[in-house]
Length: 197
Image (cartoon, rainbow, N blue to C red; front, side, top):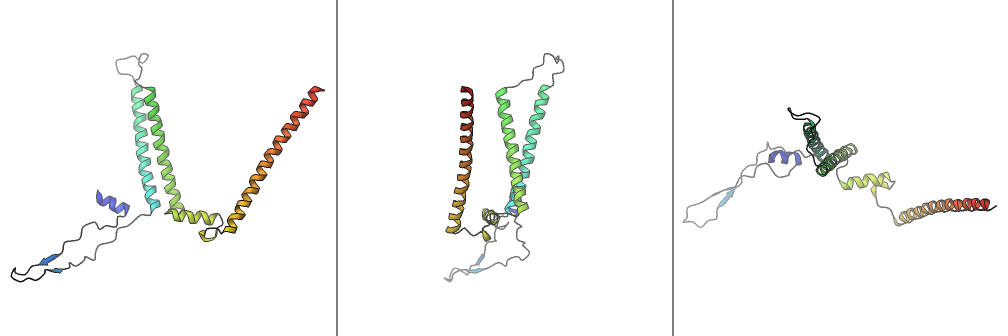
């Protein structure tokens, strides 16, 4: 089983440990040190294929999704079997066993693992489609999408300009809100004045 994990996860360790080196001993009468003879390395060993992180997340998400689907199907089948009355009882008097609190917890857990598995699969698929394998690649992609050239961080002037643009936008939004509130107050005052007359 470990060789499967090493192959899928792309472990850099060799599948078999290196053979120990042999030493030749001379007769005990001579005080010479042992001579080490290196063993030849086999040339037919192929490097292990490593999967990109995006494919690992996608495959993990698909396994998790199949597990979540199996758990959901098993829970639904169990509920259906509990609803069927025993052979020698009337269907009128049959009450399936159940606990509302446990049923709610089970439903919440099943919904959680289903959503998590779908999210993991979607994340892996998006990463494969966008060819993103690390956080750094995602940062570069987002920065180029924002217009920052080649993913280089903005200069101080660009940051100041960005902050000024945000301040102007927020000011406009607040002015619009204030104008709307003032219009409402003016209309309310006009209505009160017309009621007094």
